[in-house]
Image (tube, rainbow, N blue to C red; front, side):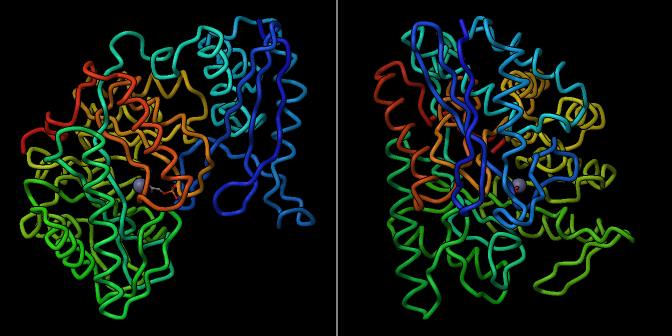
Length: 426
Ligand code: PGA
Ligand code: ZN
């Protein structure tokens, strides 16, 4: 039974405040969870409540959200069974009463929701992935590792936000992680040799000033080869264009701010087709704007049988937007970011809806993260088979990979590994 609920303001990986919640049960069992924060946030995400008090943290404090946890939320869920996550979330959603969690803040609700799940797992003496996923939680996710950053995540000349490697030929998670780390270190050496900066962006990837997106891809392919692997069989590439950032709000055009090129929706689709033809790309995320539903239909018609098309800003982990996308045949996968929707139960509903419709679900971090590793457990618990959590650099990213190493070790011979191809039809 929940005895106490404590909220606190802590810092995320960018040095910006975020919310942590701690639950204490009557018998003293306790656990805490904290929430991440995006930079290229989708327009339709649930509200991240910030204080807007210019005198603290440049207006980005979260003391209002913390206050809601320490008062209204605590009153509402005190005495409840901590393992009844659906009931706890429902009580918080009812208390907030709004569609986008504007009263309590998605950051307050999610922190409590996750802290309850972690406390319940502890109370039952179960690992988190087992508590949430039950006896079927045995599948290790394939990493989708962002090793080169551009777009809104880096002050460089590259428009595509994320260039990711996926170790599709590795036989287990541990091996896949090692391969990725080797390619990452090799990429660093190659960039350095060519006189490029090797400082890292928000998600741990390098952010060199390159001529264009193609040069970024060529560097990664070179690193894969130099590390002793084969692009196409050992590794595949994935991109996150974050194209909502490119869409002009007053006309139909896409404007790529760094290369200063303008595209129509049709021209952008052609550009993706051409990149997929030229390189071993098996996944493109947010290739079009979050409101370009017609464009998404066309993109899915043209590339959806060949590669994975992921809706991040398009779906914002929201079952209403996902069901619209499923009906209209837009995309074939959803990126799952817990704080886009703001509670564990709604996140699980989104994954379930996707999986039932034959869409893939990919559990994801945000560009602003904390040391919390819940998403590693969640990827295994919900059998998502893919996880996107940055480069093998910066401890807030590596913490998730290290947790997955521990989970694979604990699963032992029951672990279902990466042998099964992450992406269908390829
Ligand atoms: P964000 O970016 O966390 O800054 O929104 C990650 C992504 O677009 O996938
Ligand atoms: Zn994205």
